[in-house]
Amino acid sequence: MSHLLHSLPVLDVGCGINKYPGAIGIDRNRNTRADVIADLDQFPFPFRDGAFRELRAIHVIEHVTDVIRTMEEFHRLLAPGGHALIVTPHYTDFSSFCDPTHRWHLNSFSLRYFGDDHGGYAYYSHARFGEISTHVRLLAFWRYLGFEFLVNRSFRFRRFWEFYLCYLIRGKVIEWQLEAVHREATEEHPAGPCSPGNFCGN
Image 1 (tube, one colour):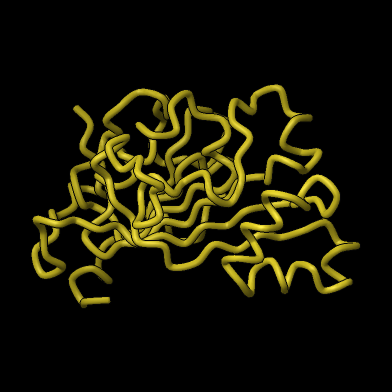
Image 2 (cartoon, rainbow, N blue to C red):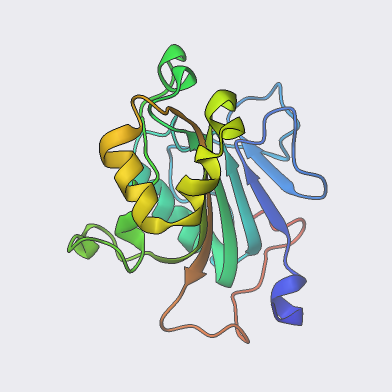
């Protein structure tokens, strides 16, 4: 990570009351620790292009109206080479369906449209992310038996698990680490942040 990229701040999207230390928080709820109050389904967010080195969306993506448009906004906000951490329940977990505000129920391949393994559907979006890692946490019983290690050890085994086993060996949480790919930009010249605090409101 270049010095210029490292100097950019972190954005915590849907930060709630547990905002990531040192991050700029954005949330729609005023009863949170957010620095910026905004509707997360209204784009663009009030920040400039490439304003952040890291974006965190912890249990957010399952709530949004449009996953693809939200991912495109995350891509816009990240400087070239910036990282996104996205965490969501696996669709076989009880928590995915017990919350009525969850609009989407995802598996570990749900964001493949934005990477190299797009299955021929790259035209869904222009935004591109490189996959640093995809980690699936399983329910504790299966984790203790070693199945979580196997699922995360091999791409082929994870795919086999998603196809045939996940309703028996249920998932708990998916964690994606992604890198924003900007084909026409370079890491040495990311867009500068707004002032103060990267906020670009009126």
